[in-house]
Length: 207
Image 1 (spheres, rainbow, N blue to C red):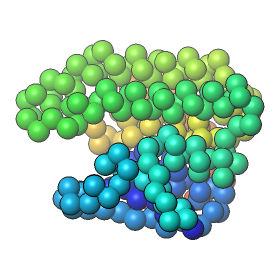
Image 2: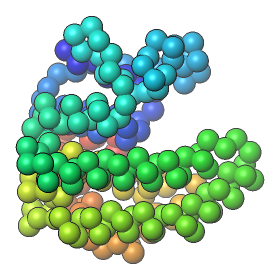
Image 3: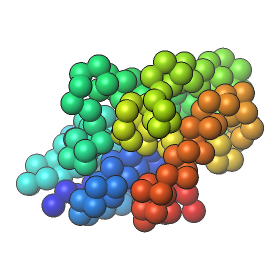
Image 4: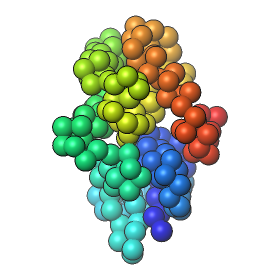
């Protein structure tokens, strides 16, 4: 059985893998590590990072590798190489925008963190959501998905939009998504997608 491990809070890097497996009704174990215990345990994990996936006695690391594996197992990836490229671009976009806001999340000095967050909002927030909006505009189908069927791309984009509109990121205005009506409509369509919003993982993440 697949075992996924992450810290003791919800975050897109692990959530997208969990949502894929849950969607396909593939059983898995989920292990949460308390953040304060991480320094004692990180040497046991490849790359000294989370998330990790354990299968058949071996441990695998990196968000994108794990999520692709889970998506393929769940039928949420694409066999067509060009459609797979669309999915991979959304994954890379998620990593890029996370990297850019992470500086203000990790900064312990409140004044410095606020300045970094304001810089992100000014220089990166609309810019990087604009990149996602353009990708969606070019690739979206009549089903409102990034490719012709519901995929890891939709799960990833949905999860990042949820994060940025949750009100949990200080100073990030939740209403910024109003500037992107296509993405707002996409987000609503995924929220309303019955096969997705009935998952226990979905309910846990959104509550």
